[in-house]
Amino acid sequence: MTLMARRGRVAGAMTAGARWQREHGAGWLDPITTRPQARWLNGPKDLARLPTLAAQAHRQRALLVLVAYYLPKRGCSSSHQGAPTSRDYRRWIDRLIDQLGPTRAAIVVEPDAVAADCSDTARATLLKHTVRRLANAGQYVYLDAGHARWRSTGEMAQRLLAAGIQYAQGFSVNVANRQTTRQSYRWGRELSDLLGRREFVIDTSRNGLGPPPDTPDRDDEWCNPQRQGLGQAPATRTSMPGLAALLWIKLPGESDGSCGGETTYLFSPTQAQRLTVNSPFVAAEDRRLAAAADPPPATNTSYET
Image (tube, rainbow, N blue to C red; front, top):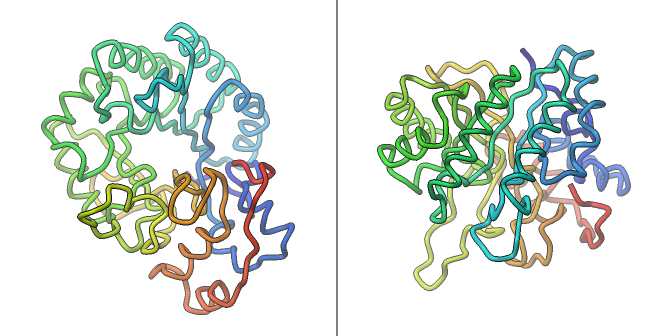
């Protein structure tokens, strides 16, 4: 099945990058905006468009790729990120299922939640309920496994089993990270073998140059680094056993936060330009066009993804 995409759209809805491109006549953004990308569901308001997206996917006979990202305390902080309570989260998952109706989607479940330091029995129980609920509704569920330089495959296998991987279609690797596809595949394949050959997907949206180099006196070199590039284009047909798809799950051009010259978590044309110019997977002429651009910064919330 093909991934759902229309020019400048994320699964049927225009991305922040595509809106910026349209308003500024920025054709140099095509290497990003013409590629299929995931739709992130960060809370109740994001579910409102799901019936429309589901209908479009059905008409196109295409696969809708979603990210469920509303777990209570999702950032392991006291800032109350995510759902207020586990009960609220379960209700949110039920509504997500209702909004999709009969449409089947690939759903990446809670990036970083299983690998996180704050993951505990209560979180694993809630995730297991979520995975089973989505799978029983006919969805293709990919429980997130973090990335290749975070946990050992043995430890991650135990964490995933506690969180319900046995009910899922598979797991996701490298979401919003920059580990190379080769390294991610090697780690994912080893993890898959420990989980009964579960299939997996890799996020290649920003891994074209691999991870930024470690800097001894810094712990934020991962945040909007100078050295980053677009990775391989999304595809559901691969030649690597066990790998279900290469996906752009993290939206290319979206800032990592207030770091690396950025002051927002929203779309940044500076980040998009850097990803395009540096990518070995972008045609030379497209890289040249991006390098010659002089984009003004995106400074308001109209570019929220």
